[in-house]
Image (cartoon, rainbow, N blue to C red; front, side, top):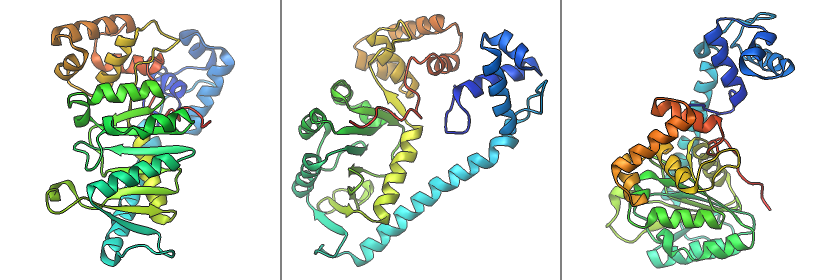
Length: 330
């Protein structure tokens, strides 16, 4: 599977794999094997050389990727860990000194499900550019189908980006609601687990619950309403880092493929890691039918493994890649 984290472009990843299989190649040879213009082959090979993945030309030899890219990956992991630590430290500082906001305070305490629902609705009604969501299973104040404000915000041009926990997709009615929102314009992705619940409007206002799931049932839900601050910047960075790694959920067929809507949905759920049995339940078919359709997609992609299918789906543009920045703001 291609993985685009800003380290290598899909073209560079493909060229590197071909270079490894060939053992060594110049621009002309790479072009002949991959049906790309020699000028493009030369550009890609030079890019691999600059990134430490190929020796100097004119005949380029592949070099170990763990040596060339290992440091970059470690830096990315450290950046993500630093963001988590900033969120944890600032949240702990808030809990130690929290008080109700006046005109000079940047953090306000919101207590109770009813008050929290009202703030979430007000946040969406006042949004002008973008809403970011971390949607965990077992919502504290508002389930997805209850969020009537989203449709009107989408209609006036507000961009919605939402990441859903995989467990939430397997709950009755949730996936259908998410896909309906996607057809209305929401950009939705999924990950196995999310660190917190989170809603951010226009990168200037966030709502983040303060009590962990294991403490639910003790008192009313409590959340922080966070305005422009370093804490808010850290929460935005946390969202973006998870967005890059999340798997898109879509039913929109690509103009570059002959996949139907049902096949694109099946492929999206498959790439997200959902088990065949759960996919079958959501599609209203048998597990055997799901396996047969996946086999058909493997035949269409010309591969004989599920890993190969995921790789070809990304390469052929059957699904948007995780690093796709999405639509531009209106």
